[in-house]
Structures are given as structure tokens and as C-alpha cells.
Length: 221
View (cartoon, rainbow, N blue to C red):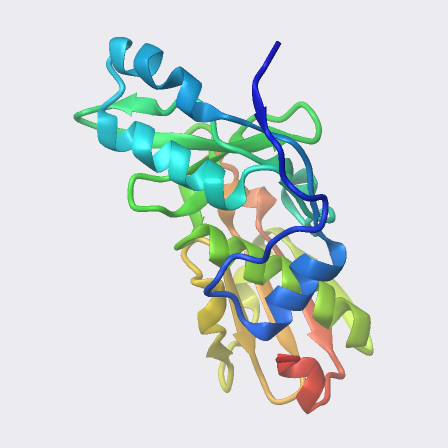
């Protein structure tokens, strides 16, 4: 039987999130049983996984493991439940840690990169956000904007590159890399480029434009 570490169903919100994301995780997240990865340590070391990578996987599991969040607005709704597994990689290419099982059968997986980035790995690596905190911030912002926007416009394919971002500023808390969020005078724009990069498929570009936002709608904490 798989060993699990008992945790409360109400999630303990990790430090370092904005107030908006803290409320999102506390209100909409659920913490489920998570596997104790420490029991695999010796086996992973014997199979050539560096001790530092085992430690990274255990640390991710301790902080994020078992956290279930509502479906994401892109990436086939995101991981079902955040949780680490055996690190994958080599000393030459670097090491990635699985970040949680997909909700459906997909051509890529959710991973934590060599530098702590949260991203997807398909045909190639696409670091979406600079950290797991950034991923959670993006979910919280999408939830917040979607509830308050007067309009939500979906833009796909080549049209994404035609979006005019003059007058917009990047939203720093999402720690955007391949994916970014932009804040204007009365709208927010989420750019989802990860699938296009990971699958080498430009047609997968997508943006969501949240229009008609007031000052609270633009930030929300």
C-alpha cells in the first residue's frame, strides 16, 4: 500500500503569494492525501538521481503536494492535483520533476524545470512561469478577471502576434516566461504560448482578453 502523509483538506496557503492568490487557494483549493516521497529516496539514488534533485522533489511535495485547484483556462485544465514524482533527466541536460498528473491524455506533461520553473514538456521544454507560485498566481488572476470582466475575447493562432500591447505593462507576480499576463487601462491580456513552443505548433497560440475592468478588476489584491 502506498504510504501517504496525512494533511487537512483545507489547504495551508504557501507563503509568497499575493492576497488575491491566497484567497483563491484558500477558497477554491482542496488538499488531498499525498505520497511520502522520502520512502523512495534510496531507490532513486541507486538509479542515478542526484541527491540534490531528490531533495528538490521532496521539497516540492512538502509545499505543493496534494493541492487540487480548479481547472485552468488553458492546457487542458492543468494538473489534476499538484504532486512530485521521480526526477527525470541527465547531468548534461538538467533535471525535471513531474508536477502532477494530467486530467486527460495529453502530448505533454507538467514539470518543474532545473531552475524551479513551472512548465510543460512535450516535443521540447516550455517554461511557462518562473515558479509554481507564478502558475498559481496566473490561475488566481484568470479566475478574478473572468468574474469581473465585461467581455472575454479568445484570440488564437497568428492573430495572437497581432495584439497591440502598447500601453500595457507586464503583471510581475505571475513570473511570466513563455506565458505572460499584461495589464492595461481597463483590460488584462493573458498570452498562452506554451503549447506552441512545447509542441512546435504555432497554431496553438492563444490569448484571452478580459475587457471592461475597473481598478479593482485590474488588480484585486
